Image 1 (cartoon, protein in one colour):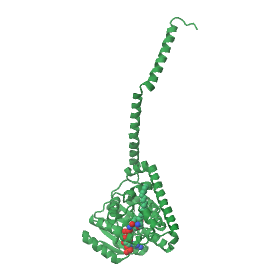
Image 2: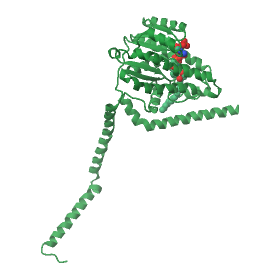
Image 3: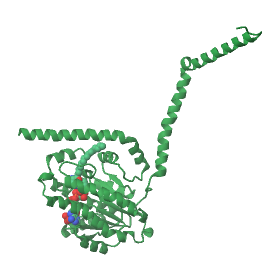
Image 4: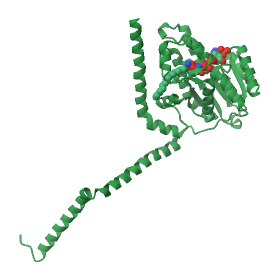
Length: 363
Ligand SMILES: NC(=O)C1=CN([C@@H]2O[C@H](COP(=O)(O)OP(=O)(O)OC[C@H]3O[C@@H](n4cnc5c(N)ncnc54)[C@H](OP(=O)(O)O)[C@@H]3O)[C@@H](O)[C@H]2O)C=CC1
Ligand SMILES: CCCCCCCCCCCCCCCC(=O)[C@@H](N)CO
């Protein structure tokens, strides 16, 4: 090809420029990597910071129901099963924080004893009501006599562990009746007066005593776990129904707790129940009451009582309401890894069950 004068130089010039551009961009990738690296590091740093921050902000904006504080001082706190164990410890604590306390249980003797102990320790005179939560009329009368309730703690509970195959249906029914049906009775009886003039009386609370065996099924607890899992369905649905009345529902999940009830239970607890339950430590009733009360005051829906309980709540967060955006954040971020941890626990538990059966065969 014959180029006119000057055209040749122009072509050379273009070739030169093309080469130059190519070498510069190659330089960019191969010969000057430090600049690319620092850009990349800067970008990932920004993402690493921005992603959690925006998740945080997002959760903060959308979480419902909103956070709430439930006052205890000068309020009427009604505690079922308040004559023994965790319920009694709760009665002591709310009395010492200046609440008006009512306790309900079956045995009047135990109630009177509890009343004296509370008066001695706090100077507060608790009102006592002898009634069985299975008897709706009896507890309706008690609630009416006690007057409108601000904080209702439904804590009564019975536990008779046994393999289902060896347990009489009467015992199954007994646990479901007292733990689950008794809780329905209590709430039905107390709710109308709790709603009355709520706006002038400040936010109210209904707290239900479940158990870690109400978050995960445990050997020997078919009936007990069913009754405590049932409370969760009740609580989740109820919270939606009473939120407009400024009533806030809490579920408390203690591990094994040193109480007269546990002493009785231990007399007949299957060995495997104890082995599996030992995955979470034993707590003092006072300690459980302290955690429970602080959870109620900050309007927590799920209230764990120890570290294992905290893990368990994250693992079983499911579809439950969450008012704390910090906890919501942890739940979202930890979901995968915590599922992994639960599978490791199952591996360990099923190992214990296998070992136990092998041992029985040998003897
Ligand atoms: N201790 C533990 O290891 C754990 C306990 N929990 C739960 O905590 C709650 C309290 O347990 P804890 O303190 O150990 O129990 P206790 O056995 O020490 O006390 C139970 C209380 O409930 C009352 N009660 C029992 N049945 C009835 C009834 N039918 N009607 C009215 N009151 C009743 C009892 O009084 P009376 O007998 O006079 O009626 C007593 O005041 C229960 O719901 C239990 O399931 C959860 C996890 C662990
Ligand atoms: C994600 C990791 C979780 C790890 C911890 C899991 C531990 C589960 C242990 C469950 C113990 C249940 C005790 C029930 C006590 C009770 O209710 C009876 N004493 C009757 O009152």
